[in-house]
Image: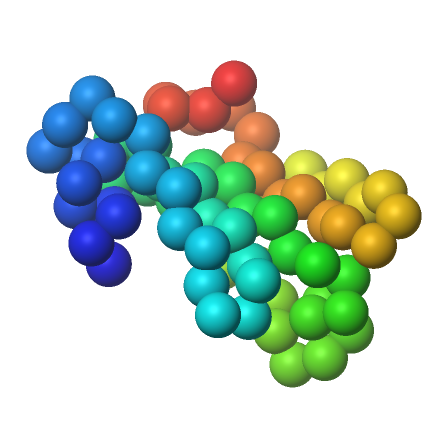
Length: 73
């Protein structure tokens, strides 16, 4: 994915919004966070983060983030 490459090669954080309304955040080439509208969580869509994650849902929005490790808060 281009956003991962851009964040790996520069000091930028890349943010991508997909056609399905999922927002993905890349830092240093790693996917560090996804914001997933609840409607998509109930269907076939899900997050793509690996490792230990935390999930927070408020109203109709779910935010899934990596916990600990390089490039994460």
